[in-house]
Image 1: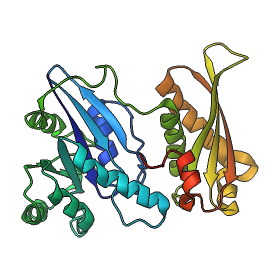
Image 2: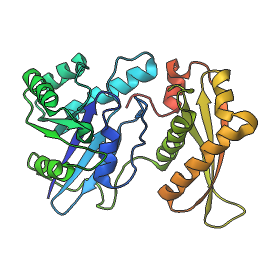
Image 3: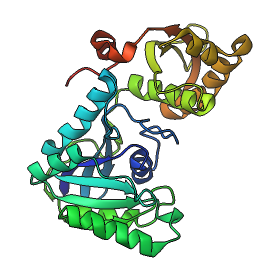
Image 4: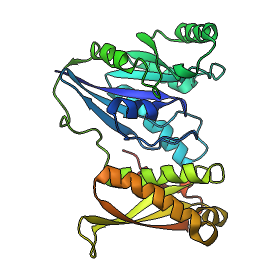
Length: 297
C-alpha cells in the first residue's frame, strides 16, 4: 500500500474542485462558474487496492483584496511544504494569464515534485496553440510530468492517478477506506447552501456572502428528520434584499435547492430554516472570520 498527500493548486476557476469531485465520484467540494468559489482547504480521500491519495483542494491563488482573501492565499501557499506531490492546474484555454509569481517562487523553494495539469481539454480546438502554451510553462519550471485532462468529462483522469502512484512511498492508510473527506458536516452543509446562493443570485451577489450553521438537531415532530437552522451573512442591506427576494421567493428557492443536496449528503430528511443578516465588512473583521472557520490553523 502506498499513501501520500497531494496539493491541487492554481488560479481561481481552473477546475480544481471539479477534478476532486470527479476522482472521488461524489461532491466533496462545491463548484461554480464564478471564480474563487473554494474558500476552505478541503481534503478529499481516494482509496483503492494499491494506494490512498489524500488530495488537498486549495482556494484559487489570486492577489488578495481583504483579510478573507489573504487567509485563502496563505492557506493555499502553505500546503506546498506539507505534501508529497503538487498538482499545478491551469486552464487550457487561458494561455494569456501569467502564472502567479508568488506561487512559482514558493514552488521553487521546496523540493516537492510538481505535476503540470492542463485542464479543460474537451474545450480545446487549437492544439498548436495549446502546445505552445505548455512549452512556455515548461520553460519556466522543471515539472516532473505534464498531463492534459478534462475533469468535467473524466478524460485521462485514471491515467493521471496511475502515474501519481509511482511518486508516492509505501505508507499507511491515514483514513478509513470508505471515507472521502475530512470536512465536518457543518462545513459541508454550509458550503452546499453557499453554492446554491452563487447559482441562484447569478451576478447580483458578489463573493461577500457567507453561511453559518446555527444548529443541527433531531426533529421534535418527525422521526428520521434533522432540523437545520442557518444564517446567510452579507455585508450590505441591498444584498440582504436580493437574498430574501420579493415576498421571500429568493431565499425560499435557495433553501429548496440546498435541501436536496443536503439530503443526498446526510441520507436523511431535512428541515432547513434560512435567515439572512447584515454584518458590515465581515471579510475584514478577524473575529468574524474566526467564527466562520477562517482563522489561522
